[in-house]
Image (cartoon, rainbow, N blue to C red):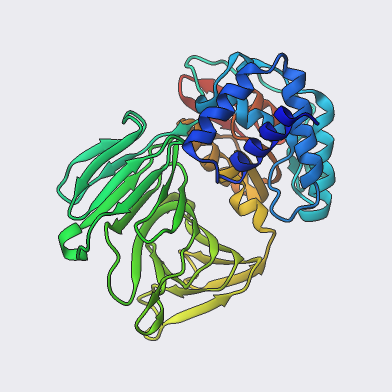
Amino acid sequence: MTEKDARLRYLLKAYIDNSITSIEMRELKARVSALKSDEDLNAIVDDLWNSLDDAPTATLDSELIYRRIVNDPRISTARAGARVKSGLGNKLRRWAASVAALLLATAALFSYLNRADAVSDKPHSKTHVAAMITPGSQKATLTLADGRIISLDEASTGDLVEQGGFRIVKTGDGKLNYEKLTEVTGAMAGYHTIQTPRGGEYQLVLPDGTNVWLNAASSLRYPAVFNGSRRSVELTGEAYFEVAKISGHDGQVPFVVNTANQEVEVLGTHFNIKAYPEDQTSKTTLLEGSVRVSLKSKLHKSAVSSILKPNQQATISGSNQRISLATVDPVNAVAWKNGVFAFHDNTIVEVMNTIARWYDVEVEYVGENAPESKVFGGAISKFENFEKLLRTIELTGTVKFKIEGRRVIVMT
């Protein structure tokens, strides 16, 4: 490997790990643009993946890494429409077999779990696109304590606002950072809210150093300055947290995430919370560390809570008002932040809710069969062509789709 290839390999690794700096991002864009051919980029990505094949932190295969690069507007090049060589998909299948048996390669078919009942003699319906439907991107708005609203996707890189002893900065790689300038109380700073639309996602670093990835159609309310014995935030939708450890007078300061029906308390850990109102359930998935999930319920006089261990998921259903624990592969829960839709035992309603939020479409169900009876598993890139994504699901033989403008009709 040449010195240039080694440097590009380093930059790609930093990009995948989300640790790349704004200066390195500009260098990565320049180096990718300077490559002579798509095969050169593929070869370097392939070499990088070979070194990560069995790494526990690996969450993408080389094909998905390539797709993520060429679809990222921060690295946009003439290769954006290039096709990926077919052999790369085999590596995801090898990795999937070892860490997520039900996670399929990006180009593979979705599976219908009651396959014997899924075969249809009717041909697949054709989709008719009357509107340009594209994948989501980095989009969000920031509402300050004084009511000012900043469109983060339209804002220029650099300082956005300075007030009350802190500065808010948009970095070169599109993240939102808080920089402390002087001592300031929480009362002086007030609360901020970051909100992503349908078809948007965003990453930010909270004032305490906690990293947050916010999924589409989600919002996070938090104090501009954390003071006191608890760090509390409010979440609607889905977010992945890597919580910074903070020491106080009485030891570690807990970090608390509140949703409509639960409270999740941690000290320093990595976890994902999915709490969309339309999903009827809240799911907290722990990757490392420890969290306590407490139920907010008027039915119970005393607090109902459970402590999660790594690779456990707590599910709270609006109907049964209890916490159910299960051992899961956390890769599926956090795949969204790495550019992948990953489903396991999900109904077509859950699948389409996820797709609709990212592609910003409306969904309608028609047919005699209840959509909740159809359960799917599989994975596919979030940056896939929308029509191709629907065709992939259609190939299970269980549902058909028709597109009318930005409305998707699911025929069961």
